Image (cartoon, rainbow over all chains, first blue to last red; front, side, top):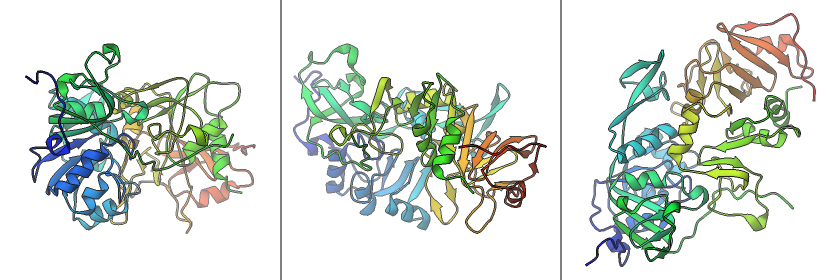
Amino acid sequence: MAGFDKRVADYAEALAGLKDGMSIVAGGFGLCGIPENLIARIHAMGVKGLTVISNNCGIDDFGLGILLKDRQIKKMIASYVGENAEFERQLLSGELDVELTPQGTLAEKIRAGGAGIPAFYTATGYGTPVGEGKEVREFNGRPHILEQSITADFAIVKGWKADWYGNVIYRHTAQNFNPAAATAGRITVVEVEELVPPGELDPDHIHTPSIYVDRVIQSRFEKRIERRTTRSA
Amino acid sequence: MALTREQMAERVGRELRDGDYVNLGIGIPTLVANYIPANIEVMLQSENGLLGMGPFPLDSEVDADMINAGKQTVTARTGASIFSSPESFAMIRGGHVDLTVLGAFEVDVEGNIASWMVPGKLVKGMGGAMDLVAGANNIIVTMAHAAKNGESKLLSRCTLPLTGRGCIRRVLTDLAYLEIENGAFVLRERAPGVTVDEIRSRTEGRLVVPAQVPEMKF
């Protein structure tokens, strides 16, 4: 009897059921806190026609950028293109369907999606291209736009520590979109640096309660740094 | 002389108040962290989920899990907190951040701002900028007054896709500090050695020049 034991044997099992044309919501900000091994596995699986919801799309040769390069992504919902040259090229050429979404709206779409709230009003984006075609309603004398929430077929999440049941703790700013993403997948897969038996994590310190998590796996991470910036002693 | 990037950051630093929670955007706004007046305490918010951003780490302290919204490695100061992206934008959208400093391509006399794309040419994405301008009551925009070819970026109407509508009241350029009031830029301060005529010639939007326009001092 597996009970609440969400451990899987390998990455094939972690992403079993992922098929062409599915949607994936991913945690991470830039390259910080990205589920890099799950992304590498999706790359190796070669699934195509994906809709990916993530704040960024990695860089050209790491993170979600590798899925972009091999044309596995059909549609990208993100807030920032930034320095990802291939992302910007596919966007400007129209090869990739891109829904640029304000970062806070994106975070709230994922949070609300996971919380069962189908849409919400926000002042963010009113009067800009983001607000075009969206329902407008005034609250307290100020116009707001109606934004629809997001859920996905899969959520891929990077945690620091988890127990076998899928209670997750994140480390530093690698938290970012991960806890919201964890709530918004029909199947939520979490990869962590350290997987421990239930009882070893303090219940007071859990960021993502186990109920949101379907599969959990321990791995090693490169944790590439995008902009190493230091001061001298 | 036009202000240097450092002088612009220093001038913005004078607007900080003791006890302020402040979000600094990418570019010149980031440099403001180096010009926080010595006698006050401010807490820097980074929208990727850090309140209480500290200095860059020593080489030995670099941690891939500790970055700011510009993806630079950073540290957390004493009294900092770390949280998720939805929580971070609850602070921003909910109006809890006291001051926001961000860059722009264009602003206009109605307080509109454009900062995230040039159609057909360049798409950076809006990141958190649309949420920041919608959520903050107190925003300072730092930007170039005019393009290299002399074309003004302080306009009667923005030409690029907007980031926010009617939300900007204060602008610091490399030439001047201005406030947007009643459909005009009001010239409040000049960069050292820059004349009112020069500013006027580089401002396409309606410019109001008070009787006294002091020079900034550094």
